[in-house]
Every structure is written in C-alpha cells, then in structure tokens.
Length: 219
Image 1 (tube, rainbow, N blue to C red):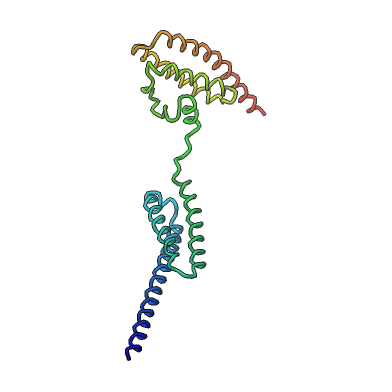
Image 2 (image 1 turned 180 degrees about the horizontal axis):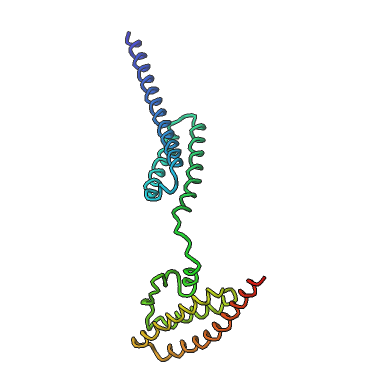
C-alpha cells in the first residue's frame, strides 16, 4: 500500500511539473505573439501619424522585442517562434528606416546652405543677426567668408553672388560696431587685406555669372 502511495505521489509531482512546463511554454508563445502583433499594428499606422509619439513607440518595441527573445528559452522546439521573431524584426527595421526619413529635419534652402558655408552651420538665419560676431572673432569670420568665396567662385550663380554681396555688407556693418569694442589694429589691417581681395573677385565673377546666364538663355 505504501509503495502505491509513493508511486502515486511521484506521478502527481511529474504531472504537476509537466503542467507547469506546458503553462510556461504557452505563456512564452503568447509573449512572442504579442510582439508580432505589436509590430504589425505599428506598421499599419501612417508614419506621419506616429511622429509625436515615436520615442514611446520605439521604447515599447524594444521592451517587447527583449521579452520575446527571452521567451524563446522557455520553448523546447522554438524554430517556428524564432522565425516569427526574425520576420517581425525585419519588418520593424524597415518601418524604422521610413520613420527616420519622416523625422529628419527638412534640408536647408539653397540660400541657407550658402550662408552655412560662408559663416558656419546655423550661424546666420532668416533674422540675419550678426550679434555673435565680436572684436575677438571678426577677423576669422572675414577669413572664412573670403576664402569660401574664393574656393567656390566658379560655381556661384548670379543669385548666389547677390546673396554673397548682401552678407558681405551685413558683415561690414557689424565691423563698424565691433571696431568700438576693442578691435586690434593688427586684426583691422588683416581684415582690410581680405576686403581688398574680395572686392575685385566679386565684381569680376558677378559679371561673369550674369554673362553665362544670358548666353544660356539665348540658346
């Protein structure tokens, strides 16, 4: 009788263990299915509609992806589940690439690109403020301006030269202000040399660009 009880007890323990194991495996599959469903639901939303909440969406994806990957360890034959995860991962990466393009800032206008080249990224915007130019850096600002124009003079259009002239005059106006703020005579002399280089370069190339455009228009 005692032996029967022992055998029965072992059987119950084994059955309980199997039941727990099956439940753990089912929960693991549910976790993976939830991950797959999440990816599909994200892909069904227009990229533009997700812009405001994208950080939260991506964070939730990473959480679910990690849980799905961990769940594989609880599934004995997990080849099919692994394939599910990998397929969803590819789907999400493709969608994430699309979102990267949607979230990317618009390319600056041709005018802004020119200003960035002349003064540095974002230094001069639509407000045309030169407040950041002071007695300590104005020589280097002129230097970058004139050298950039010199290096690219053959590629500028007539409109580019008009913009360059506008920026040059604005910089000159700022120079009149910073001269009263302690501009050294040495820097003043160097700036004068850069101005002497710029003036004929502007005149000659502005005329050449206009002639080229006129000739092109007649063809």
